[in-house]
Structure formats: structure tokens, C-alpha cells
Length: 569
Ligand SMILES: Nc1ncnc2c1ncn2[C@@H]1O[C@H](COP(=O)(O)OP(=O)(O)OP(=O)(O)O)[C@@H](O)[C@H]1O
Image 1 (tube, protein in one colour):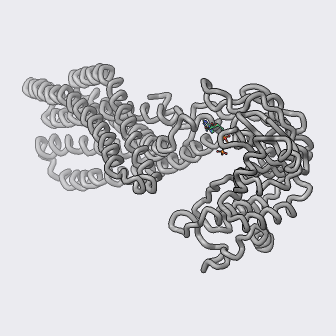
Image 2 (tube, protein in one colour):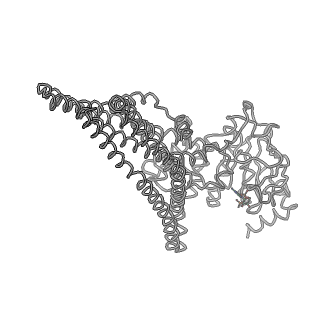
Image 3 (cartoon, rainbow, N blue to C red):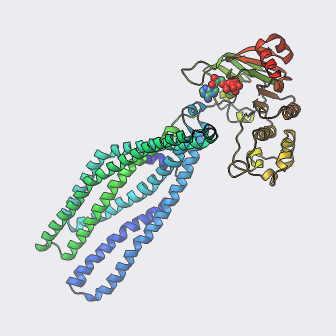
């Protein structure tokens, strides 16, 4: 539990707020103790010694100290909630940063729904447990116990021994049940993650589910996952009840023992009646606080389970890139004997591949579906690294360059994503361009006209709660974004596949004009898209089987000729 707390502590940005929180906590713990002492004076001085003049003073003080804890409780709660919400935010930010930094191969294993569940459930729960339960409630119980034990030691050592015995029994119970509590909590989490994944899939695959009339099947799937989750919850609840059955009886037993010893001491005139009432109240409160410590420490095991889930991602090694500055221009791009497979035990997707991309030219990669075209782009973008061989720029492996590297190369994918924001925000992506530049790029990529057709024009919201764009509109917007960025190398991975032939032709013409003298790598199925490229590579099963211009390949490459003639018919 300590290491989990330490892990969480690293991400707390509001450490100064603890001062206020702990001040309120100490005052909150102190005030009931003062109230107990006032109670003793009330009995001994007013009722037994008949000092009635003290009565009003004691009642007023009692009233003040009765309401005191409520005020300090509120201050403590608000302060710690503030810290926990900020912790949740900073931990989520770190988690997202980590996801951006992880090698893409991890996402073959990690389901998006599971990652979302880590953020929604584990980070939220860990922040709440660490701050509100452990660093606040648990510390409050421990401070109260220390005050109460000190006071009790002045009044009755025997009763203090009884309390220490209770503490030892609780400690033994903790050792017995602690690990099991964590185990049950982990099982609940696993099942809950599966429910989340199923819900996420049910929504993201909604078109397919409805089109194939598989609603009942999907609901059954969900029901099954939910039933497993429910079973795990019930098992956890039953286990908690079992602990309660064991821990509760001895709490009452303790109180009986205290009453017995206290009464004997009053009868034998060892302590006054006031002292007996105070000692009993003290012990009562001490035992209750010990029970709280026991419960909160068990809850702390849930923190361990949540932190372990978060660490399963945060603990993974980030992609390591070098630190070489990339100040000059790109002068060469080469794949040198590159072999690559996505999964360790699967056949290579790229097979001892060597390609040279001439700088300042338009280069195309064609080939049948699954031949490895997009994989080439992924390696160039450093999303994956080769198993053998090297992808080099200016003679050095792409992984050796520092953070300027992504500013040199941009990409437009077949299915571009947009953040839920305005069209303009999506185009500029946190860069500074004036409106004229934006409109020019959009005019060249044939999207200005449809954008100004929307009532809010460039301020139109896209994505959630905004308008839906067609596949072709999305592609043209993504192309405009790339044109604005205007990097030395531009990769177009089926970036115009959703456009009709006429629009695609115009877009390609404008692209050729804008990219003149710059390196553009085009991955495409349609030969008409790449026909005028300076150099075309034909890929088959991860190998280059032919290269040249369109005219040369038509005559020399049967694969290229087949691709071309099939599309003509
Ligand atoms: N993330 C991935 N994990 C595992 N295998 C993958 C992954 N991405 C692609 N593959 C596999 O790698 C092979 C090559 O894929 P790639 O996307 O590079 O082909 P492509 O030529 O671009 O195909 P297409 O023209 O259909 O887009 C395919 O067999 C594909 O199943």
C-alpha cells in the first residue's frame, strides 16, 4: 500500500493544500476530546461536588466544542476533495501522455475499451482512495487514536491495555484478510473492464450490428459479461460480510470488559464516577476509531489493485528515440534490407525490403491489398521499428532523431480523425495560420465551397454534437491540414480513395502544383491516382518486384499491368 501511495504522491500538484487539510484534521480530532473532558467536569464538579456556578460555563463550552468538529470536518472534506480531483486530472494527463509515447505494438494487445476503463474507473478510484480515504480519513483516525490513547493513559492504564489488545487483534485480522481483499477487488475490476469493452464495442459497431440484425446476439454477449461482473461483486460483498461477522463481536466484547473493569474501579474508589464515564467514552471512541482504521486499511488494498492496473500501462517502457537535432533538410530516405512483422511469431510483412525514395519527387507505392504498402508508411513515421535492417534518413536511422522529426514528415490517412471542435481548429491543430492561408489551402483541396455552405462556416463544429462529414469531405479537410503544415515529406495513404474520379483528379493536380520540388509518397490502389508519378514501386508480399515510370511498368511488370487493366475494365 505504501508503494501505491508513493506512486500517487508523485502526481499530486496541490501539495500546499495539505497544510490546510491537516490543520482542519487535527482540530477536528481534538475537539471531541475536549468535549469529553468537559463532560467529566460536568459530572465531577457540577453533579458530584455541586459547584453549580460552573454549569453555564461548561454548557456553553460544550456547545462550542460540539459544533466545532462539523466545521473542521467540512473544511477537511472540501480541501481533500479539491486535491483528489486535481490528482485525477494530472494522473489522467500523464496517462494520456504515456499512451502517446508507447510503442504502437502495444495497441495490438490493449483494447481501447480497457484503456478507457483505466481512466474512467481506476484513475478515478485510485485518486479518491489515496486522498479522501487514506491520506484524509485514515490519518484522521490515527491522529484521533493518538490523542485519545494519550488521554486514556492518564486515566486508566488497564483500559489502555485493553485497547492495545484490540489493536493487535485488528492487525492480525488485517494480515489474514488483506491480500484476499485485494484479490476480490482485482477480480471485480477485470469483470468490470470486460463489461466496459462490450459496451464500447456495442456502440462503435452499431452499424454492423443493426445491418446484420445481430442485436440479440450482442445483448446476450453483454448480459453474459454483466452476469460475470455481478457474480464477482457478490463474492466480494460476501467476503466483506464474513470479515464483519468476525470483527464486530469482539468490539462489543471489548466494551463489556471496559464496563466491568471501570465499575470495579469506581466501587473500590480508585477512580471517580466522572473519570469512569470519561474513560468509557474514550475507550468506546478509541475502539470505533480502530475499527475505522481496520476498514480503511482494507479499502487501501483496493487502492493497490487500482494502482496496479494503472501501472500496467504507465510502467511500460516508452518508445525511445534519439536526441540528434534535425536542423538541416532531408536529403535521402532509404529502407535498407528491412524485415518487419507486427507479431513476433507471424510471417514478415516486409521481407528484406530495400527502397530509395528520391528527394523532391512524387513516388508511388502500389500492390495488392495486404502487400505491405501502409506498413512502409508506418515505419517511416516511426510508429513501428524494423525487426531487421534500417529505415534511414540522411544516412541515420529514423529512430535516432529527436523531437523535430515529426515536423519533417506529415501523413494523410484513408480515414482521418477529427477532434470534436470547429473545422478551423481541426485544420490549424494548434499552429498559427491566418484566415487567408487556411482558406487558400481549403480552396486548393476543394473543400472551401462546402465549408462556406455551412451556417457557421469555418467555425462549424465537427464530431460529437457537431455536423457529420462525408468520407470524401473528411479526406479533403485532412489534405488541407497537410497542405497547411507543408512538411518536407508528405505521405498520402489512400488519402483520396473516397473522392469521385473527377474530384480526385482535380485534387491531385493541385497537390502536384503545391508539392512541386517536395517529396510526396503516395500509397494508392487506383493507378489513375499515381500514373504521373516520377517513380512507382510495385510491391508484392513485402518485396519490391518492379520499379519505374507508368509507361515502363506497363511493359515490364505483369503485376502492375494486371492492376492497371483490371481497373480499366
Ligand atoms: N496493426 C497490425 N497488426 C497486425 N498485423 C497487421 C497490422 N497492420 C497490418 N497488418 C498486416 O500486415 C499486412 C500488410 O498490411 P498493410 O496495411 O501494410 O497492407 P497494404 O498493402 O497497405 O494493404 P491495403 O491495400 O489493403 O491497405 C497485412 O497482412 C495485415 O493483415
